[in-house]
Amino acid sequence: MRNSQKIAVIGLGYVGLPLAVALARHYPTIGFDISEPRIAELHGGFDRTGEVETAQLRGSTLKLSADSDRIRGCDVYIVTVPTPVDEANEPDLRPVLAACRTVGSVMAKGAVVVFESTVYPGVTEDVCGPELERVSGLECGTDFFLGYSPERINPGDREHTVDRITKVVSGQTPEVTEQLAAIYGSLTSGGVFKAASIRVAEAAKVIENAQRDINIAFINEVTMIFRKLGISVYDVLDASATKWNFLNFKPGLVGGHCIGIDPFYLARCAMDNGHDPEIILAGRRINEGMGPWIAREVAKHLDGSARILVLGLTFKENVPDLRNSKVIDVIRELRALGHQVEVHDPYADPKEAAHEYGETLIPSLDGLGPYDCVVGAVPHAPYLAFTGESFETLLKPDGLVADVKALWRDRELPEGMRLWRL
Ligand SMILES: NC(=O)c1ccc[n+]([C@@H]2O[C@H](COP(=O)([O-])OP(=O)(O)OC[C@H]3O[C@@H](n4cnc5c(N)ncnc54)[C@H](O)[C@@H]3O)[C@@H](O)[C@H]2O)c1
Picture (cartoon, helix red, strand yellow):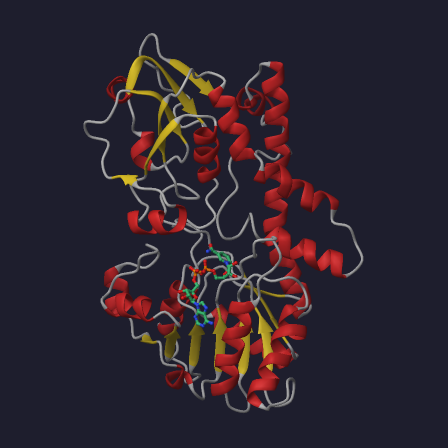
């Protein structure tokens, strides 16, 4: 079923591209991105994020452009640009504001502008609305309307895809909420939930991620306590998880574009409204300190200047996404402690790794070693397949296997080799 509403998606990254492709199945849709190389690679049928396959891209009616004139006069604009933090961990709304200026300069009366970027409550109505008004000369709530629909997709997750998850929608008026419910409802089999207001929808998203961050921070904190007691947190979790209502979070490095960032948005909103966000910021502090802490714990088992191979650099398993990866904190701390560290990642783009972190990735594990220590930092599929023989090839006979993510918990190590895990 096709619908005549013309939709533009602004920002074709991990979130925007799959959404635009899904929308194009039902609506005339155009994807806009300020990055010309991104548009060129998508035209060529290649999505570097790995979220949309070449056949899907080639078979889609989605139009693509880096020219804002091409999105003039659309009925609905959906903004999916990044919402990072700056050096001081303060929300950086510049991409969202830039997207507002683009949309403000091309939208016509009657347009609906929906934000999917993760923000704190109030950004859509108090920051974006006025910017759209200023640039367009139109009045918000009369000439054009706002909406917010948080994005929940999870990079690399093939189960909870944009066409299956429940979509929360909210509009500036009941009519806009209904319009968005109809649009998103046609995309997903997971149904839509109409939030009570735009602020409520913004708040719902930001607490989903802050809650995850805090839960992981708690497990990271008990991991540190149990280390002092000489017991493994994984053994403790196995036991605790037998209780019906125990939340089974795992310890680890909290990186990426969402979980480690969004709590800072909520914290800023709390402070602006006169509340000191204690748990939220404590969680952030614990999780930010986890990389250096892991490095120091591993280094206690190494002598002199050890040769170390770190396996995995991306922020999570089986994705190429290097943004805000905390593995780099482990690497830098190990080097600061005097060790020599080399890094391998089968999915990360070597150019991006060099650009983002100044790291030269080892292209292949063949013929490498023997190292004093191998750090399993990211549970990428090829590392999960390691056998005792893999360790024998990579490590010295008394080498140390530092299993940060419990990748090899059930693996038998060659005799003489040492194991470190949380
Ligand atoms: N990645 C995720 O899993 C995920 C999940 C839920 C929500 N989110 C949220 O969705 C938003 C987008 O995240 P992402 O991971 O897709 O980001 P991304 O970095 O993968 O993609 C953003 C795209 O927007 C483009 N862009 C930047 N500024 C622009 C502008 N002014 N106009 C047009 N295009 C512009 C960039 O070139 C890039 O292609 C963020 O707010 C993020 O917090 C992300």
